[in-house]
Length: 103
Ligand code: SF4
Ligand SMILES: [Zn+2]
Image (cartoon, rainbow, N blue to C red):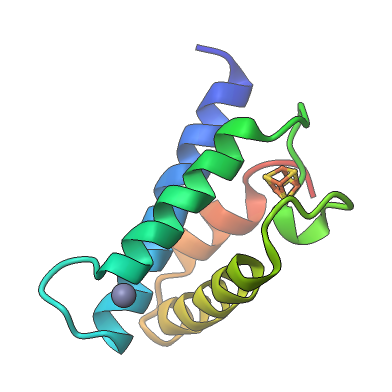
């Protein structure tokens, strides 16, 4: 398996975790709600189609391939879940997120 594939799989797993936390804490549904499931599906599709190798962090990307509405949503998810993990002392997850991929 190439490093790019490893990084994409790690980023997909991180995205899923962040969206799950956001949904659980904000939408209070027993499992991922339809809106968050759609966002995760969309984000994974963008990740699969990313033209960069090595891939930069999406927040540092000049292309910004997300549709504006989904970009706003994913930013809110990353901010909320990032702060949630800081409050829970889950710095290991944040290091994984911020240190994976090219800055
Ligand atoms: S925003 Fe940029 S780095 Fe992120 S998936 Fe789209 S093209 Fe790739
Ligand atoms: Zn949700």
